[in-house]
Amino acid sequence: MRSSQCVSADRVFINGQVLTLETAEKSCLALAIKEGLICGLGDTEQVKHLIGPHTQVTDLQGKTLMPGLIDGHARLVRGVASLHAGLPCGRYHWRF
Image (cartoon, rainbow, N blue to C red; front, side, top):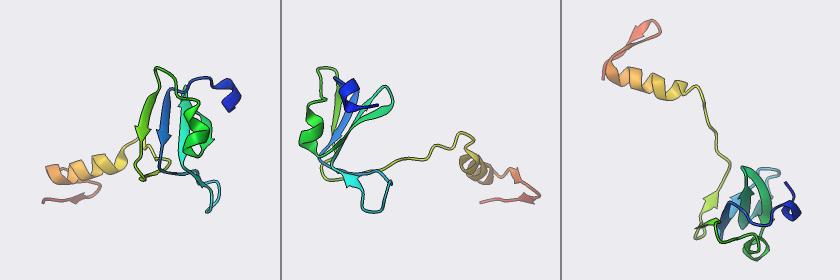
């Protein structure tokens, strides 16, 4: 989504280090999101114009924001829970 299509963002993150992972050097200080898509990226002043009356603003206070990984299958969580419950995991039975 182009910033010209984004009059008011749903959510804005400011005053932080935003890692884009496009290149090793590429990072910004602010990020704006509208309908789940990035609509603004740059320094805090460049993104502030996208803050509207209903925009949720998060001040990162110098912290780093980076893309996340969502595992819809949750295999890791299920495996750990099985181990702690003493349930069989594959051909092994673990107890802690």
